[in-house]
Length: 311
Image (cartoon, rainbow, N blue to C red; front, side):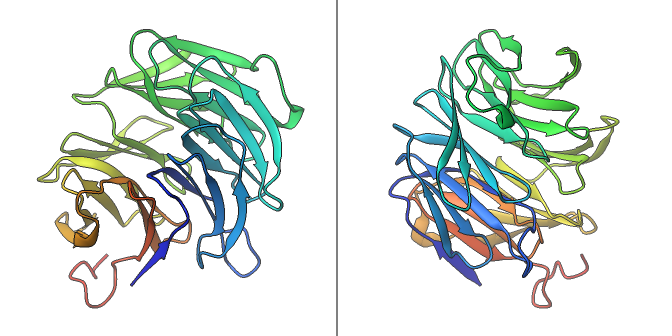
């Protein structure tokens, strides 16, 4: 079963789920695209909640607040913005000198990280409860020469991880502003995600998917699919994950069987690459976004008809 979400006129560059936060067990899904638009929907039904209108040019990053009250976006106009999910109104805008290509809200929706894929980029931390600010709380570092691809909070919001095109994953302590750890990869990370447990980090790069514990930095698992991976998402219960290939295919893998099974290849979307893939907070579905402006929700594959049923 699949459910198509339409509305974007160009490639969906990022999307983000809230936690399960509605009384009926529902949750929100926010998406942003090359067309400059942002939408917030109910992630379980597709019902439109609000439009996010205000960015000039492509919007590259989005982060839903865990409780579904606010959403953060970042775009090529050099702004990061905070929006009300209830009304779609812009609450706060933060101007920067560079395009904003990644944003992340902490678990309390009080702090926001921003980063840029431009050279000599900075990672900035803002207090979104204080309204517009000329300067961030912290400008934690400058990545000389190589752009920052992604940032996520970890360790109970005391630290954050950044992935860069220089093939490094770096952990930074927010209180001191100092780098505490660095992981070197053979290729730059295509995706980096914190699992629902708040500890397990999933990184996809080259022909590898690595899971590690953000608290200890111990490697939990390292899988090597027979294809180049462009993104991966771990199920909230951590029994399986889905990933995308450079050939525009979606694969599933169970941690017990460790066999990659092709789930979807969407021939009607051939030539329109997949930009993102992520599990919903309840693990019932996973979503993929495409360069033609579509978001597709797929029912999770651990059913009786699938040979990965032992998961």
